[in-house]
Amino acid sequence: MPESQTDVLVVGAGPVGLMLAGELRLGGARVIVAERLPAPTTESRASTLHARTMEIVDQRGLMPELGEVARDGTGHFGGIPLPLGGQPSRYAGLWKVPQTRMEEILGAWATGLGADVRRGWELTGIDEDAEAVTAVLHHRDGSQTRLRARYVVGCDGEKSTLRGLAGFEFVGTAAGRELIRADVAGIDVPDRRFQRLPRGLAIAARRPDGVTRLMVHEFGRPAVSRSAEPDFDEVAGTWARVTGEDISRGTPVWINSFGDASRQVTQYRRGRVLLAGDAAHEQMPVGGQALNLGLQDAANLGWKLAATIRGWAPPGLLDSYHAERHLVGSQVLSDIAAQAALLLGGPEVEAIRSVMSGLLGLEAVRDRLGAGISGVGIRYPVDAADHPLLGARLPHVELVTEAGASTTGALLRSGRGLLLDLAPESSGHAGLRTVAQDWADRVCVVAAEPRPGDTAVSARAVLVRPDGHVVWADGGEQRLRDALARWFGLPRPTRR
Ligand SMILES: Cc1cc2nc3c(=O)[nH]c(=O)nc-3n(C[C@H](O)[C@H](O)[C@H](O)COP(=O)(O)OP(=O)(O)OC[C@H]3O[C@@H](n4cnc5c(N)ncnc54)[C@H](O)[C@@H]3O)c2cc1C
Image (cartoon, rainbow, N blue to C red; front, side, top):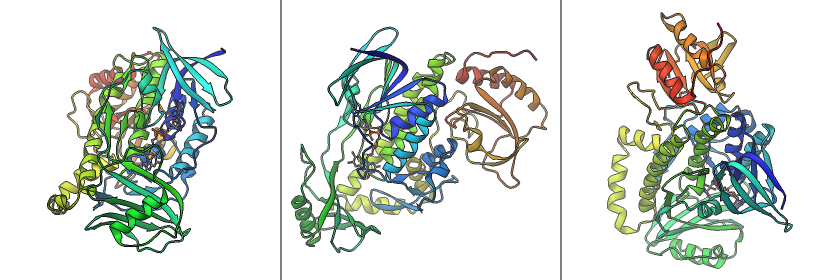
C-alpha cells in the first residue's frame, strides 16, 4: 500500500475542514484534506452567518469573495423574535450565505494557500504511535493508501468516523422530537415565520424562484429512527394535519428531517487526534448556530495546531483548544436545547413561552442571548482578566497606521499575532513595542491611531492572538512579556 506524509490530515472537506485547512496553511503547517465525496455537496443546508463568523471572514480577507449579502436584523430564540442588529459588531445581524457558497469560498482560499484537498478518499482506519498517526484511506475506485500525519483532525461531521475510531466519548441526549423540512415547488401557502397552531408548529417561506421552504412539527410526535429521509406523502400528511392545507400536488425538490439531539465529546483532543465542528458536537440546527460554532472551532484550533507543528507553541497551547471550545460549545448546546423545548413543545410550554417573551422585553436579556447567538460575547478565560477586553475578541476599529488607513480586521490577515499600540506617543509605549520585537517572527507590531470618534476599543495597547482574541491590554512591560510567552512561546531576541 503506498504511503505519504504530512503535518496534519484533516478528515472532511465540509466548511469546518476547509476553514481549518486554510488556518493551518496560514500558520505554516503542511495539510492534506481527505474527503469521501468526489465533488462538493449541492445540498441546501445552513444559510446563516452570525456576526462573529463574519468578523473572522473579514480577518481572513474574504469579504470581497462573499460579495453582496442580504442581512437580517432580527433572529429568534425558540421562535420568539430576538433583535440581533444591535449587537456590538460591525457585522451585527444575520447574513444570508448559502453553505454551498461558503464552502466554495473556503475551498478556494485553502487551496490557494497550498492545502492539498483530495476528494473521493474515505478514512477507514487509524493507528497512532508516539510520533504520528497512520491513517488508512480508501478511494472510490477501490484503491487504498496509508498517510502518516503528525496530527489528524476529524471535521467529518455529525456521524464522524474518526470520533469512533479514536475512542472519543460522545455524551448527551438522543433526539426526542424532530422537524421535517421540505423545499416544494408548485404550492401556494401563506408565509409563516414560526406559527404555533393547536396541533403543531408550521414555518413557510416562499423563495424568489417560486419554491417554498416548509418546516413542520406535530406536537407530541416523537422523533422517528430513520434510515432515509421522509417521503413527500409523510411531509404532505403532517402539513395537512398541522395546518389543514393540502400540498399533496406540489413537487418536492429536497426533503430532510432533523431532531433535537444534543451531544458533545467530553474531550476535543485525544493524543494526536482532535475533533472540530459537527464531529465534536451535535445539535439541532436552529438559528444557524451549528455551522457558526464549527467555523469558530476551526479559527481557534488552526493557529494553535500550526504553532505546535512549527515548534513554537508554549506548553498547554494546544490543550487550550479543548478548554476554550468545549466551554463555548456546551453553552451553545444548552441554549439550543432551551430553544428546542420552546419551539417543539406543545401547549404545555405556552406559559414558559409567555414568560420568555416578557423577559425578551428586557435589554439585558436580549443582550445576553444575542451575545451567545452572534458569538460576539465569547470571552475565553485568560490569566488575570482584569480588563474588559481580556479574552474577548478585538472589535472592528478603523485605524490610521504609518502605512495608511487600515482596520483591526485587516491587521490580522497574515494569521500572526498582533501588538497594537493605539497610543504610540504615550510614555512607556516605545518600551512595549521593543519588548514585542523579541517575538517579531510570530507577532506583528503596529502603531496606529483610531479614526476620530471610533471608541470601540477601550485600551491604549492590546496583544491579540491570530484568531482575534485579546490576551493582554494596558498592562506594563513585564505583564506583556508574560502574555507573549504564555501565548507565543519563547522569545527569540534579535540583535538591536
Ligand atoms: C441535511 C442537513 C441540513 C442542515 N441544515 C442546517 C440549517 O438549516 N442550519 C444550520 O445551521 N445548520 C444546518 N445543518 C448543519 C450544518 O450543515 C453543519 O453544522 C455543518 O455542515 C457542519 O460542518 P462540518 O464541516 O463540521 O461537517 P459537514 O458539513 O457534515 O462535513 C463533513 C464532511 O466530512 C466528510 N466525511 C465524513 N466521513 C468521512 C470519512 N470517513 N472520510 C472522509 N470524509 C468524510 C463528509 O462527506 C463531509 O463532506 C444541516 C446539516 C445537514 C446534514
